[in-house]
Image (cartoon, rainbow, N blue to C red; front, side):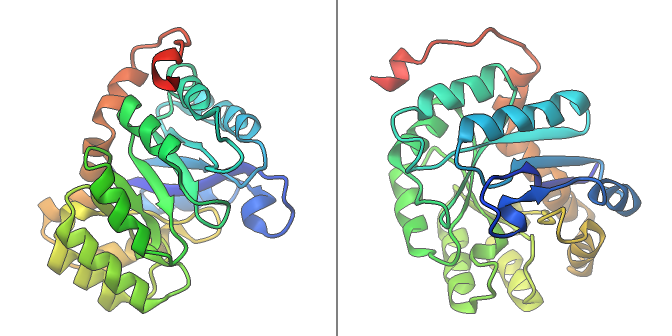
Length: 260
């Protein structure tokens, strides 16, 4: 089993770049098949209305539940006051198993973190190089797992990436993925200091090739047990409760207790 924990999918409405225009799986899927990727976690493209983009992602996931898992896209700014409703729908109707937020769109909020805690969901939060707030998240929400992609900075800010490695080592609830990390020495350092239990394989598809990104994990020359952690076991552990719930379809639940 190989799980790509970081693949964008669907259409956005920003039209400022690929990330908020169109994340087509047309080329990604055959590339993933060729690389041996068996499952993918789909993250919605940037969109001004989370309700719309999460519903669209559900259309992709429900058609291939044996291959895809979905993460619920949330905006700390645009979704203020309705996060419990959105997450409840994503969990109980769509079967999503995590939350995605991005600092470029807006900073994460307590409302999002509280929802993650309530529904026992990991949060994939792209801090876009602003690593310092991860320290606050880790200590304020020790029972929430935070996956900080790109080792903290897709832009190859080595200062941010080194700072995140320090947090990976110190905080049991902080994780990272390998998507788009070009400084191989820093990827090695992350595993050496924080262990393979803190790294998840991600490709940042459909724009980056999953085979190329997977080659970096192979190049780490981990033991078989450690490589399994990176390729699938860490994700399965972090989403165990959410996946169990996904396999027990439920009606949409009320959110009054969380909203209070």
